[in-house]
Length: 360
Image (tube, rainbow, N blue to C red; front, side, top):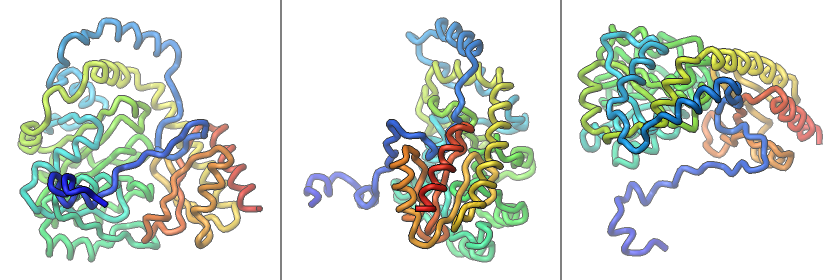
């Protein structure tokens, strides 16, 4: 029973939520969190460590991270007219966007999508609405989306591109219709851009209400917690007013700036992951009672036989492999699991374990 002190202090929206939980992965092959499984070449590590020795950690970091912003502009081909804001991961940027909205504003996104859109919106007491994706294609239900836009007049719409957890790219026609109908901002979340070969970055110049958000996590820098958002300079200026000072620490600034200037090995790793994605997809679709869905990200969503997802998930853990059980979320994710593409040896171990489980 919740104590009177807790119910007095905290808003009802907070009391109703559950904390975001990260699964324990000790002694397991970790294929649950869409991370790049590869580390850096030794010569790159040595050069990086030499650079860190000169980092003035006794001083506050550059509050504007000017050098890093310029590197990000160049490496991500951000239009010169667009503003750029950095965050402590995409999560902080999502929080800033939602904090800036008037009280009780409406927020919209397809469902399922990245869980933090809903989590942060509800934390702040906003009116969040998830519009179910079409079950046969994982596309936005455009008539339902447009109806919800007309009825609720959302000031913020999130579109994950590719979508997490379904891994597909929404059609341009659907996205453009949503942008044109939106009374407020549309955020295209391109967290998986390195694997997608598709982007709305070049369309920022022609859409004043469009912002593109990315992260360096999936590229291979998840431990540094850096995200960024680009778009209309006036909008970025307003978001900067509520950004906490020094939100990007010196070690992150130095390291990401260095890494993005040595991006060749990241590109090689990305190509390897995409090749292995094809192999895992083909192997999954050869298995009994498994349907794998095409992916433009570094993970694959697949469907099991009815009511088998949780048992398979637990059995894989017994075999030393951790993936993500999405079936409890229901709707189009019922009976679905999600696996991150790992190193070839890890992918092979996953397929071998899953094959054994399905035949026992």
